[in-house]
Image 1 (cartoon, rainbow, N blue to C red):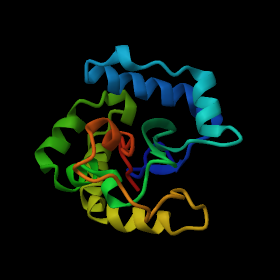
Image 2: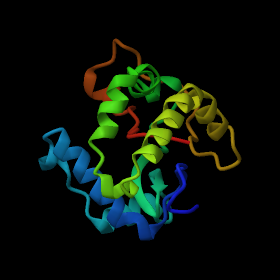
Image 3: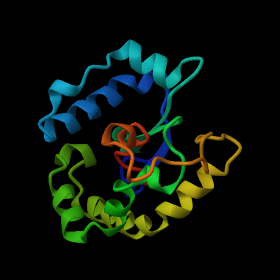
Image 4: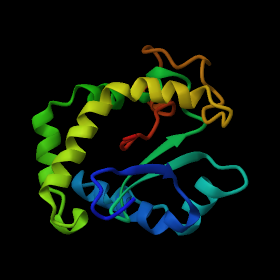
Amino acid sequence: MTAKSAWFSVRPALPADIPDLMRLKRLLAAAEDSLHAVRAGEAAWRRDGFGERPAFTAFVAEFGGAIIGMATCSHRAVTGWDSFEPWLTRLETMPADQVWAAANEVPPHWYGGDLGEMEALVEKLLARRARIRELVEAFARSDRNPFPNWGQATPSSSDPPWLRASFGATIEGRPN
């Protein structure tokens, strides 16, 4: 991929990406006014994401040689489509003007100041979001077995909120 490409790529995160993963997590927490909830340090990320028995899979999105996004999927918590809600539906139904508003907040130096490339990237993202379910299902059925509990029972709506919350997945974005 060249710096002038309007394409971005998504790949599994590596231990070397931990500083960027932590940076993006802090940016999200700051935007949600919840920095106080960010507690995991580099050792925890290394153990829980890349250790002998990882608890989650992380992906990074790259554009122009920089990591611009991330997604984490909990191995234990994903039991099926309900585990991705409400985030999956939000990604699929987010109005295009909200996506464009978010894109307008990206600092120009992150995409080399080439507005045409950024516009092409957003158009591609908008077109691809219709494939999210197809891609998640293909990943769930892959030989990597990312969600070993796929198809198992999920908590019912009559369960207490603390029990339902324990089955939630962390999805910050999954462009592909």
